[in-house]
Image 1 (spheres, helix red, strand yellow):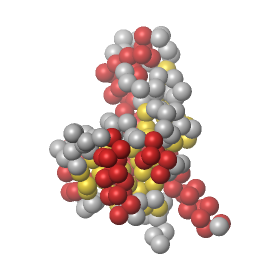
Image 2 (cartoon, rainbow, N blue to C red):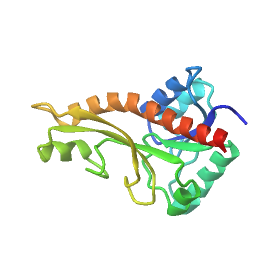
Image 3 (cartoon, helix red, strand yellow):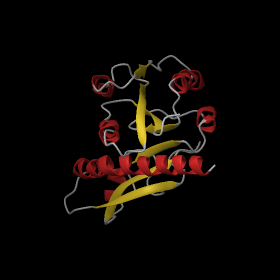
Length: 198
């Protein structure tokens, strides 16, 4: 068994958070390795990025398929790669409850708000409209309910006078790129530690 935890990353687009996860994995002391990048969009720019770095990729167009049917395909690809933990990094599809239950406690997601505030979409616009003093991002464990699982890490970002959803999103995204690899590493280290104690 590898001394590093085997991680699969799921993306739908350019995969900027995936890129930060891959960059962090290059450190010799990183407790995880990315063994597969999987996507529901064969044209996702992040796939080419991962492929160029020698990471195995898998893609299949979800259109025309039932959710559970597609999730069984991606599940099979993850299991074939012996993935032990999943990181959702801009994966823009809701997961079926069967998929989430099959990986219970082993899927992480990053969400651009200070959960439990602003689940779902348009988080930055909603924070600005509410007159909040700060926004941010949260890494949480995925459960069948949208953006609802336990938060494992959070970073706060002040909302500045004159911020638009776009300017705020840009600053929050920079923080996401630091927060996600660190949170993933901590979770991976915890799993490896509990395994060694067992």
